[in-house]
Image (cartoon, rainbow, N blue to C red; front, side, top):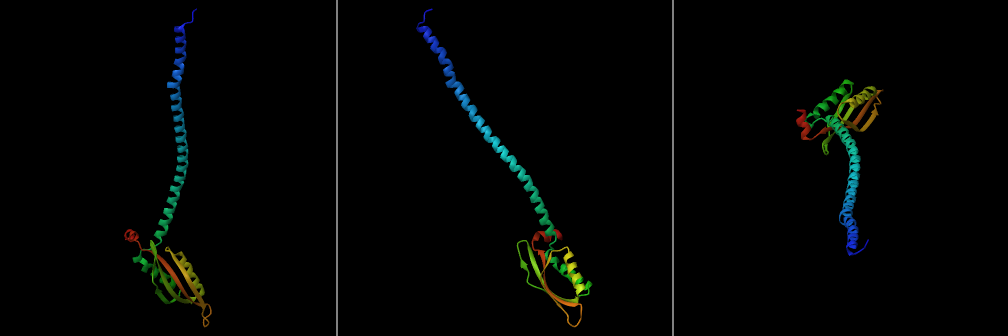
Length: 184
């Protein structure tokens, strides 16, 4: 067998075909596959982090719902401004039910806040200590938000078991238009 130029050219061509296929076909295809794998890994990481965030969001939505319910509960305990006289009547009625003599019932200047206002009331009552104690317990049971900020209780030296109490009580009420319309 004679090895000439033609055979040499044939061998070179046979070697060039796989080399050319590697350079122009396989190498770019492998680079494209590696790039796609990297993008898939990044998207999988994002998906995992989104799934973790979704778990937190569902917990957060549940927490927001609970807080919304709590806000609604307390808003329902705030009478509208135009109904505050009913709360004052109820306080007076409770005092009379327990046989307390109301010496002073004075509304002080109200203090507005964001969505509610505070109406301080100065009260002086006189009566038996047990009756006064029951009066305070009934005030605590009222369905409205009230707070006794100051209290001065003194015994009556002339009558045993009788006290004279001076207190500043705050009644909180809704000053927003939303509650006024909803409760009408």
